[in-house]
Image 1 (spheres, rainbow, N blue to C red):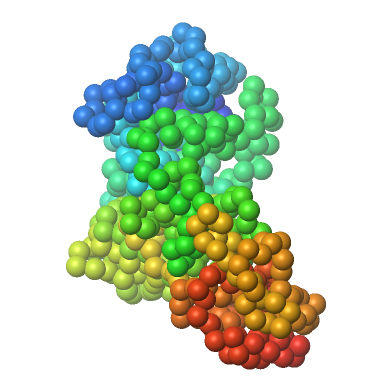
Image 2 (image 1 turned 180 degrees about the vertical axis):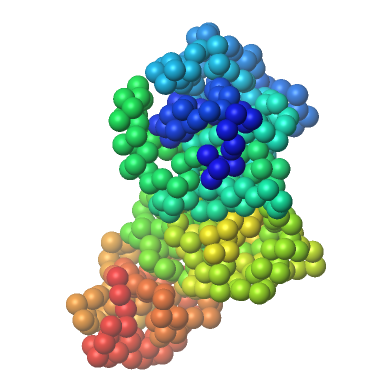
Length: 521
């Protein structure tokens, strides 16, 4: 009990239950403690949404539905094009588990926070998606809803705690602020999602699962024969569900986007896309007619700010490698001065994350004019980092806080890539058997194979616009960059390459490949 900050008899705990195994096991752990115990179930998404957000001055979503919060005993109609959380089933599971563990229904409270979620989490997230960013609604939900609005409905005294099934640890101290620490099960650690909690929220929260492994939590649920012991983990975004199509769902709440194109790094249009929010940096982009597997490298570019830059599927392409990020709104849990002193004293202990399910990575932290202005430098660079994501900072397992990424810097954003321009937008050339430019109107399936070395097909790709990289220079990029040259070499119209230099570079590259692995697929 004392490890959780509780003392016998004079504490009360409200267990926030979701219907899942983790929160059910949390109740099972606490049920025999000599404390006052009850349960609360929070609904944060209502399938019936309004033309204008409730109690909000924000713009209306693009939907004709009306907002009428329903009660837990009512039947929510299935609305076309929406895939909300099945909160009724979750609420039923909460009632079943509570009854099984001896908590009567009278001590199970239902609270509807869908209005608060709409205005504090969903609408701001839609704005970020619409502008091309990649927000993290779960971080905002924990700060503003689960440990904000939900905590506000509990009695306001320092002896009443909210317990949840999150994987993380909170160290409570009698004379100093509580600390958020990583969970014992690092593979399930959720402190990234909790990284914007306040000192006050931490002081009112306990996380009983923080010292357990996920497999042991499941074993406890089975041992206690909990009704939901075999329930699968929920992996989807709450307001979309696990089977919903994310981009189509968000499109219901955005204005029709101006036309935007997938482009090469040099700006050559390839084909039109459906809207910035359908894609995120690092995601595979499916473009018809392309012989390469392409990935999104940059969004919101071009004259109208609606274009998306794509690059081939190199494992660590320089345009996908993020070397640093900056945020001007970093939230330090315990204040920036203390964090700054800790980081400067022991910089080697700093680890960061930009996603929940990623291995923490070392980084350097630089402070700007104020403590919320932070630059994080990754070493080595990270793949697929986007504005709008949250960057969290830990020091030796202690979560110091996080901030929304406002800008990113990549290893390189303008090399040449083997993409096939849309035939309505560009007229490509290829090379004949002598290595000279062919005439226009060639078959796009025709490929020029210059040399086979070390079992790999090496070809040359050049573009009309100067990129500043030769083939040899590209092959000599940083060691952690894996380069792969397509077997389809397309030379667009107007290419000003000196063909004799092209052949010389290729021969040099081929000889190097024969003597050792220069290229890798």
